[in-house]
Length: 121
Ligand SMILES: CC(C)(COP(=O)(O)OP(=O)(O)OC[C@H]1O[C@@H](n2cnc3c(N)ncnc32)[C@H](O)[C@@H]1OP(=O)(O)O)[C@@H](O)C(=O)NCCC(=O)NCCS
Image (cartoon, rainbow, N blue to C red; front, side):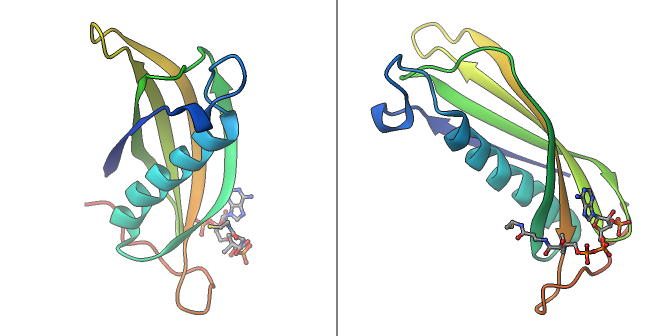
């Protein structure tokens, strides 16, 4: 199961050097990871952990940012998702893999307690 989202970097998303704020990007990654996990769980999820987020290449104002979230494993109630973040320079379409992360999301019921995730088909 997977999800993809596109964002563009506006001035309010950047620091004084024109680089995208890490916190803003992590928020985008979290949403995309949740969409992939919700598709797997067929229900609501919460984020339990964000591990190993590696920022390799800066993303700058004007870039198109593609976030790809792929379910890499499914537990009893948890879903582990790998997230790759690509920048795309709009002028020539050049793409670079900038950030990689692994998030764990847990399927929850209305009471906020963990519930079983359907087994992958
Ligand atoms: C995530 C949460 C529902 C887990 O509840 P819990 O009572 O600790 O649940 P359990 O101990 O039964 O663990 C449930 C699953 O979560 C996994 N899990 C819990 N904490 C984890 C962590 N820090 N890292 C990785 N996995 C974790 C467990 O391994 C288990 O997976 P499995 O069922 O696939 O084996 C609870 O801690 C919570 O509500 N946290 C706050 C979430 C939140 O507010 N997120 C931000 C907003 S979305």
